[in-house]
Image 1: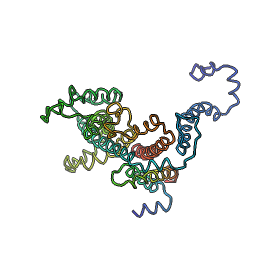
Image 2: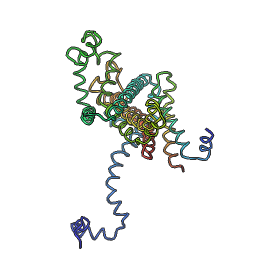
Image 3: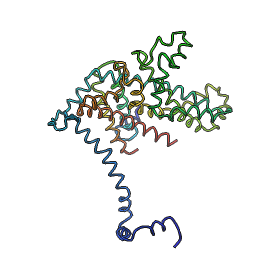
Image 4: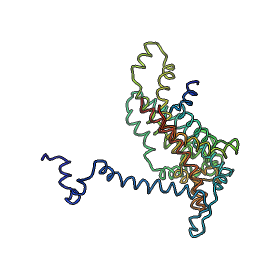
Length: 315
Length: 62
């Protein structure tokens, strides 16, 4: 018998197991291998989801588990969807989402366009640019907190150098006007490299002969940019927008480290608000309904994301 | 445009997926817009309809 991994595995199988498996079909053996994964998936993902849906129709409180659970129907959903405070949290999330995506796409695409040009030290610059996204959000949140310090923070000194203002005259994390922008700046700093990498993949997928044909037709550089580069990178850009949109909709760690949702509730994104409802106010049923609303939104966006991904793959 | 409507009537996947995508996008916009509270109130049902529709129509024929 030749010495192959398959024969070695067959020889290593205990005789009792081999006897049991001998009568099984390939399909049954496949199920035996896949079974534990499916069980874990059901136990860790599907069961909690179904339980959360069930809890969202009740007044359950996790810190008073012995209390009688009442079915409240759609009241939790009704209260969330008519609550103007939660609406404000949604707007804070929208502000964060819109501006982070806007800046990340703008800067990310520009960087990708520049990096795509052949120049000396190209690889080194790519590595340096990509560094922020490799850091942990907790670490990034902490050191940006130091950078934003009005007395000793480097950020305030840089802004003061260009604007002529006193460095300690403004507080990025403590001001109602500036705090929403401070989290936008940090997220942009951290995740622009990700958008840049996706755009770079898009730019490198454009065949050179298209530009050569455009050159033969005497198309200007600007025209080449708008009629070749932008349309061909667009599916990749859309992918980056959707991916960052879904991720930032769930943003929690970075913002908690930086502002903790404050000052007031100006940077209280939906995920922070949800955590407060669930684990500070212990309104589990209400928080479950809140989580389901966010889940459906993210799931809907993820469906579009998968569709966009398939379109990119088809190319 | 007429292709879109004929695709809808013939239960083709492309136009139905497009419709579901529009509903999801509209629902997300309604959820986060700062203009009217009633739009926010009805956002969830619009997103839910769009998402469920997307799951169903992705099994339609091309």
